[in-house]
Image 1 (cartoon, rainbow, N blue to C red):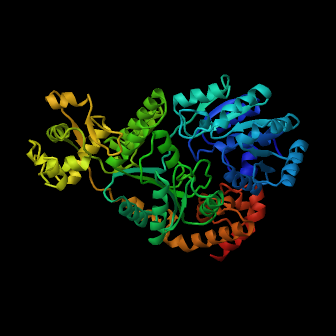
Image 2: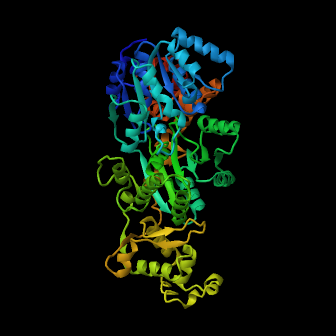
Image 3: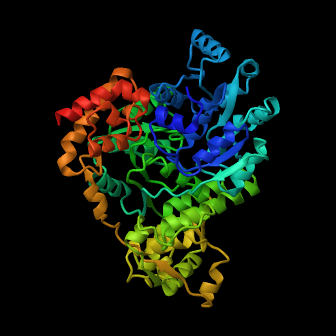
Length: 601
């Protein structure tokens, strides 16, 4: 095999040119120097260590945190003619022994190892005797003790620098703010590593956040209107909600499966394999699902509960559209999300410093939800990246959000919280404001309050919007007693005294995105009507080849490659070399099969 990076890119991976800083990163590693790579999901991180592993003498050792995904990563490389394998606890002893012998003989190009296995003395002794070309530490943000994906085994990976100082290392992640980057450098001994921080922007993802009214029905409307047959992920906060939503979606005609830590390992593996290998499967999941998912054709990620941080939101939504085709990040968000997360944080046993950090992260997440500015601009600014003030592909750009002077209603709301004793949740306070003489209002004598009925000209939905924004803005806090009793904070004083005014966003119905409706035809990504039959024929061919080998369809060809085949209609194997994503190994294996389909259309 050639040692020239450009030739490897062309002949093995089937791409004509490097993207962004890929070539610089690859040259750094081939030269034997360390690197820290921050690149968005779908930006081509894997090539940054796979090509140097093929170009350098020795084996590339890849530290990967999820055993379940190693098989698919290795299968994809084998399709390209790359000698790849993995070592993890799923293998029988004879298989482990055979792989170890291939490693020692230099008969592997890449070997994937879980961090907990790599740091064992037996594995390190094995690596001492092996010809190693580089170490790649994937999902490097897992080393951060402040992060939502912290893995204790990652802390021990500094041993790679201590034990193998001459072997280049590359740490890669899609999600890391400045603080997390500093932790990665410190904990992995990457002080002298060159840092490559590429744009966090995912322009193909449309960001949309809507206020919860009836979240399930809103999700159902979104799916049926825009993604009726697409693969996607729906995130929920609790295991119970995951189960109920998965069952409900299945009853509504969708191919939905649950995924959470309460399932058996076998169930999780079965559901994950269905998601990866079948078309149009929706996984309803807790945050236990998703890290390292390589499926390129996830067309949407939906949140029915608020993520705890912008890092979590960015990483989870980033699992959509890895193939750079149009995709959607949709979320329904409401007051109870804010209250629930703040109660969980305040009631945890974490240190005060950790709680402060978590509150700051949640506040940034709330700011994204409540902003009237461009979502993408706000999101990228959090990661320290400048961007245009209008992206044209988020809900606030497509349908600008109006604001209104809410000072007087806000004063009413705050006064009512105070006069009811700061002991009640939002529903009761709204009943008092609207003059609804419920049993609870009567039992507490709140119909005699001066605030009883002063807000009857506004609907409960309007008041709920006001309270949501007051809690999100830190003017009200929710008690951790489990009942969400609202309490005033110091920020209220200027408003109650009349020394300050407050503008709030005017909630509007979720925009009807015409472009989204128009692009959805039979679950296809931007396929014109007259090419749908040809598109389905190519997909059927891909599915047949994938089933024969027991691999996901995208391992054969990505959707983007099928679209390119439709566009260019190659008539020979030589013509197919010009199609992005078709290297020599895939051309030899699958070229004739796809040419036959194209010739019959």
